Length: 279
View 1 (cartoon, helix red, strand yellow):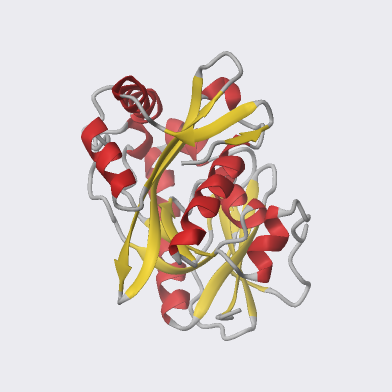
View 2 (view 1 turned 90 degrees about the horizontal axis):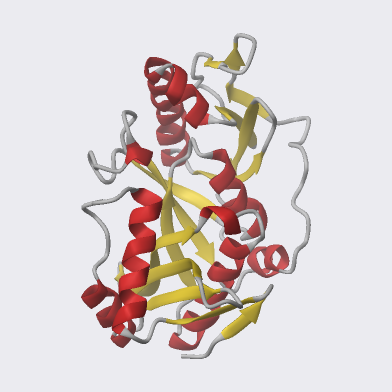
């Protein structure tokens, strides 16, 4: 498979057994040593044979600083790619490497006839959400409650594994525009109506009462900007956020809305939901 050179990194498919094993080690560095759901070298290798992606980002020194893994198959009769894992090593974060890995993945599956890609992420993780919406141009139309059950990763501790299912329409104007580096909107429209706010002061906001009675064109859902800090201080409060956000997302996505943007703030962030647009 072709290599991609970007920002001093070479992104290419894993080739040797040692490279596949190095990917497993990076999985454990990211999700915890002994993480039971790590993808083994054999599965990484077989995925490549069947149109999947198992590729790493290598520094000029030859170090593996990131990887992406996904599978290609049929969903409801349509060929799609499911991006199962992406990780960037700590010192290499905040340099756009995650976006580059996704762009590489997109370039590799387009020749296969794939025009939709999916992956999951935690709606309460605002930093990851910002990458997905602002930099990649995804939308979300599906919410999966406790998708992975209880795992042994310390990143999943205590609040379950509710997930957004990303919909990346690879050939859409929105995706091409965001990948070009175009800036996303910085604030929601004034007409947008809040269906979940936040109360309290200080660094640990508390969720307000979920409102499932609205039918406005644009809705806003507040989340804490740093759920990890809340989990460290009060797991009960983190669970309150999980339950409140689950209530509004399950209701409004079932009612025909999609999540289209996230606006990040220092203390809280806001998702914007709009009526489904099939562009």
